[in-house]
Amino acid sequence: MTGGGPRAERVVVLAGGISHERDISLRSGRQVADALAAHGLHVELRDPDASLLPSLMAEPPDVIWPTLHGASGEDGALRSLLEFLGLPYVGSSASATRLAWDKPTAKSLVGRVGVPTPHSITLTRDAFRELGAESVLDVVRGELPPPVAVKPAQGGSAQGVSLVDTDEELRRAMVLAYTYCDVALIEQRIRGTEVCIGVIDTGDGPVALPPVEIEPLSGFYDFEARYNAGATRFYAPARIDGAVAERATEVALASHEALGLRHLSRIDLIIDGTGTPWFLEASVMPGLTETSTLALALDAAGHDVGWVYAELAQAAVRDARR
Image (cartoon, rainbow, N blue to C red; front, top):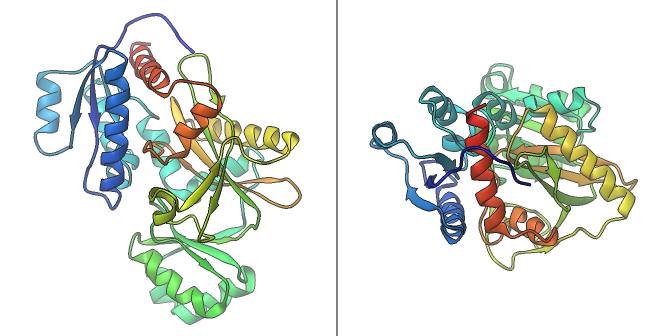
């Protein structure tokens, strides 16, 4: 996973931001910065603010690594600005990021290449109000009876997500989702084994890492289960049949490529009782904290995390000069 050409020496890691996931981003950024520094790169860790762009223009680094989670880092806006400035950065392009950030759009795109994704409906807050909440929910219940998952159409770390088992819970779940986003996604809930598959590309094409199985002790992989040590059991590699793991890997790679992603991503799947992997969503900047699945997957694959991060930084420099 290496390549020749220009090399990165100075890296600016962006962490923090103003999203709901600020604290997680700070933890991710520190992990990345420490790993890169340990591999000989000069690293500056910055929290984006009004001085960021003038500073980058005055002293352009060799590469930028945005570890910003939530809208401030994953809606494509920051990446568009970096592209305008001609600054290399680790991660997917602005256009691909926008597609993956919007869950209904991502589901549509991966569905077009034959990847199974749960049946769903997308509802705006305005439609929910104007057409009458109860009338809308009556239609939804007829087409998508519980159990379902209700989630904001945009967002990460399971914030605003509800698992709905009864008709009475559905309205409350919609209200919660709308506090995070003006669009809500109601999705058929597939019961099975939840896995995450990291995909990395340091120059030789996308490579899927071993699936990581997620077993939250609460039964729901919510924000607390993701980032509180001991709240979730992780199995890397996942405790699934080899043939099932192979199918899940194929689905992850197909999803990564259908969305036009690059460098790294995390594809979230649920594997049902028949061994069918279902696409749930994709993260263009997965969490890189001490409890994140990407680091677990890299370790399971026998890779040194810091070395891979350094190679991703070099890949971003090479890609920008093509």
